Image (cartoon, rainbow, N blue to C red; front, top):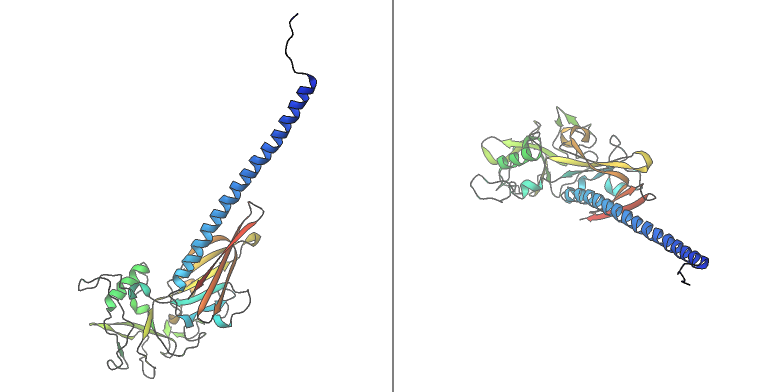
Amino acid sequence: MKKHAAFTMVELIFVIVIMGIIGKFGVEFLAKAYQSFIFSKINNELQSKSETAVETIAARLQYRIKDSVIARTSTNANPIAIADATGSNYKVLEWVGIAQESRRGLSLQAHGTPYLPDWSGIIDLNAGNQHILVSPQTDTANVNTMIGDLSDRNTTIDDAAIYFVGANSNVQTGYGWSGTNAGNGKLITQQGAMHPIKRVAGIANAFTSSNGVDFSGVDVYEYYLLAWTAYAIVYEPGTNNKGTLRLYYDYQPWNGEKMTDGKNSILMTDVSTFQFMSIGSIMKIQVCTKSDLAEEYSLCKEKTIF
């Protein structure tokens, strides 16, 4: 008589139990692997977005006129000197930027030698008069070209201003932040921190006043910084504690303009927090972003700017 091999009921039950255990742990393993992938993907995206925003802000903020930095609780709120801004209710960080590109001399000089500064940052105190400031080794034509390139032909050197290093200034009124001390589109005096200037016809290394008010009574210092635009970073709250971070530029507060008169672009979306503070002349900024895909996973990036 032949005997046929077959599974007994006990063996079948044992196999089913083993398969169930393997299936359970296999599904859990796959679920954990998928969850790890999702978290990694979200983390990488948030890292990239927040780092790009922070580095973009820092790249402009490092070339600031340090005395000009202000904070606002909204775009239309009164300006507060950054040193006096306490708390976390501020949504706007604003400052006057140095025209660093033309200071580096990235445009080609007229005589064919590249990379000389377009503006030297030096005033010859023994030359000029109440109508003209002489700046040796400055080429206002090249400055004008650079400003035009950066502003998409919207702004010229005649919209710019200079700041004397070492001069005393009132941050609320000296830079035009309040928008109330402008006349005919320009500051009505030359007594503020920013001195509106324009080119002098036929003289490549000189500035004159662009608002019809000369430099009489102005304390002129040897060193200056040139600026053609202010910058503002604005946090716009949204839904679910996520907002938008926007950059404003190409506007001149010393000419009576506000940030809304300039250009703007979105730096980042899904921003949960934008904070900043000043410690002496050092600035610290923080940008936090979050995702709702993984239990409101959030990530923050910080940057210190000297």
